[in-house]
Structure formats: C-alpha cells, structure tokens
Length: 519
Image 1 (spheres, rainbow, N blue to C red):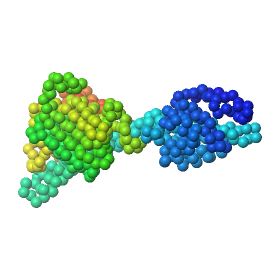
Image 2 (image 1 turned 90 degrees about the vertical axis):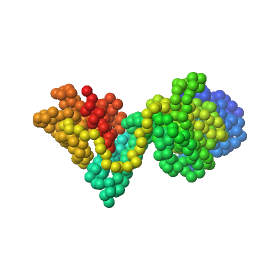
Image 3 (image 1 turned 120 degrees about the vertical axis):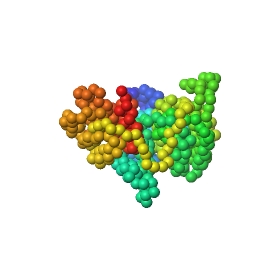
Image 4 (image 1 turned 45 degrees about the horizontal axis):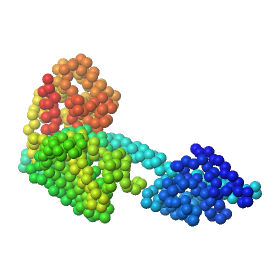
C-alpha cells in the first residue's frame, strides 16, 4: 500500500491545496479528493484516465460523471454505501464501472473524511484501485471449481446410470435370444434394447462434457456423426439460426473417439450460435482432401497426406486478429460476465490433437468464422450403427470365469450372459468372497472378470492378490466409472483389458475371446 504524503497547506484557504501532488502515485490506483460542501472534485491523479476510461477534466467539470460511469446494477448499492460510510467517516466498496469503450472494469474504492478544528467535514480523500484482474482470476477459479464439481457429479451419475443400463440392456438381450423373430412381444424387446443403447450414448456425452470419458477410438464415418447430431444441434442453436449440412458422399473414414467428435461439433456449434445473436447460417461440411507438402508446410503441425475435413462455418460477428489469437486460451471469452466460461473452445484443440488431427481458424469481422478440422483418413470400414436387434450369434467359450461384482442385479445379469455364451461362472459379491471361492475351487480359474471399484478390496487389489499365486491368470476389468476415476484406483484402461458398462452381448463375447486368446 502506498504511503500518504501530506501536501502543503493553502494558507489563504486554511486547508489542503487542491493542486498539490499529495500522494506517492501508483499507476494502478486513482487518488482523488473532493469538497463535500461544494460537491466539487478538487484533485484526481492521471491514473483516473486508465481506470475510468475518461479524462480528469471531465470529473473536474462534473462530479456526476463518476456516478454515471458506475454499472447500472451497482449504482444504488454504491450510493447507499457511500452515504452510510461517509456519515461514519470512512467508506469502502467494490463495484463495476462501464468505460467509454463499453468495457467493464472492477474498482475497489476507499475514502475517509477530513475535518477541521470544529469537526466539520471539509474534504473527502480516497483511493480507487483497479481490481479487474483479481475478479477475473476469482471468477476463473470459481468456474474451474464448478467444472470440477460438475465432473464429479457427472462421473457419479454415469456410474449409477451405467449399472442400471447394464441390467436393462442385458435382460433385453436375453429376452431377444429367447423370442422368435415373429413373436408379438419381440418389437417391444427390441425397442427396450435400442432405448438402453441410446441412453448409454447419452451417458458417454455427459462424461465427454465433464472431460472424464474413457476414450474409445473407432473407425468412423463423419457423415454419420454429423447426421446423428443434427436433431440435437437444431434444438441447441435455436430457431433463428439456419443449420445447413454439406456432406460428401462416400467419405473416407477416420480413427477417432465418437464421443469426442460429438463434443467438438457441439462446442463449435454453440460458439457459432453465440456469434449470431440476431440469427444467421451455421454450416457443417465434410470433404476428402489430399494435402500436398506446400500446403502442409504453411500450416504448423500438419503433414502431407490424405485427410477428412470437418468444417464448421458461421455468418456471425467474426473476430479480430487479436481475439483470434486467444480463442483457445482457457477461460478467455469475449462474452459478458456470467455469459461464458471460456472453456468450450479451449477443449477443442486438445481433443483434435488426441485424435491425430489439426485445426485451423479463418475469421473476418462482420463476415463470420470457419473452423477447419483435419483428421487423418484411414482405409478401414467404419463401424456401422446397429440397425436391427436380430438374434446374435456371438462366439462361445467354455472356460471358467470368476465374476466379481458388488451390485447384485448387475452380477446376476452378467452371470446369465456368460452362461449363455457357454462359460462356467463362479460369482462373488466382494473381493474377500472372490478370494474364498478361488482358494476353495478345485478347477483352474481361467479369467478374473471384476468390477474396479468395490467396497473393501478393489478389483485391482484383488487381481494382484490372485496373480501372486497364479501369474498366468487373465484379468478383465469392468466399470461404469470414468477413466480418471479408474486411474486413481490403479487401472489405466489403455494398459489393461477393460470393458465399459453397459455392454452388449456381442461386445462381451468379443472382449472375452480377445483376452482369453492372449498368450
């Protein structure tokens, strides 16, 4: 805090000279002095022009300019605080001001009265400090804490929801196998299964939003990804924005996580909508590209080769070069206070890079913005969505599996699915019970299939104990939790055999064969 240095006395007036430089100046603080008897500003230091965005002369000419600069939502509170504080001799408050250029800044104002020998207030001296940066940091911290809380909530909800979906999806598949294709109730069973799969996809999007989702790269057709999200995007962007899709037929495939691709599209669509408050066009386009060395060299980090382009274009307000240079910074936003987190776009480059891609932005003020995402093309066929729930014929097995799951309903349906595939099943509700079964079992256990998070002993701890006596024991981890939660319990899903709940019978069969066939 800067120390006060009293100015010389004006002998004629009998009080402090208004023209005196009476403070050790700090460029971030506006020192001022006023005469309450005349409602006149006597001194304002040059920092006023930086903080308030107006000249010192304007405040000398009309003190009400100070009050009019205060944000309309704060004026009444500031006035009451000033009247109350000044009547007690001191005043302190923090409030927003609206600068001449429309920018909003936070000011911390402190003032005290100076009295003459008779006790009459003859001056009010104060210090106004720009604390905008501190408020921004505090807001960013609150937002980060909010996102962390949302992430934890999403992870917990997803876990419970995935357990319920495991039961619904599992029993629907068991019924589908038992009912003939022409059975009157078959359509209802199929619809239950499809609804469970859509709910599972919704859960994956919830985890993607909170950045807690387990990554599952797949060979994808971006046209199908865009088409699947089109209905949701129309609701998201509102009626005054026209959504246009231009999708190249026969598009090459890409290897990417479908949930993350959905998140990219959603974040860019929301950004485009916000740039068009009065309406406009949002265009999603896909196209195959062959990038040569000269073009790739002009784009840092991009290599020559075959790519699939996903372009998202809006006809909004566009961006200046200064804003465009910062759009991917965490917490950077051009929106008003409380209207944006500055996290939506910040997530996009990381997601693109995780999926081996590259992003380029083109924008012009008053014309619009285009985000171009280049994803490497692959020659494999995309995984097609399930069109029908016709009876499946998964690969069968005969090995002995020790199933460990603390949720009774999930354990029961998983055991039924395993038996339907031909496996011998020993089921346990906890790690301790599993150890008891394993040690008392005369038959060799070929595979431990265990939930990761359980009361008492975790799945990872159980696997370590059992492998101490059988180093060749194969292990398949199950969980409805997110990747971050699993990692905290010693399970990195990319380094172990892992199956995310809920799963289909085919997915279970394929994963079991994959694990059991490993040497």
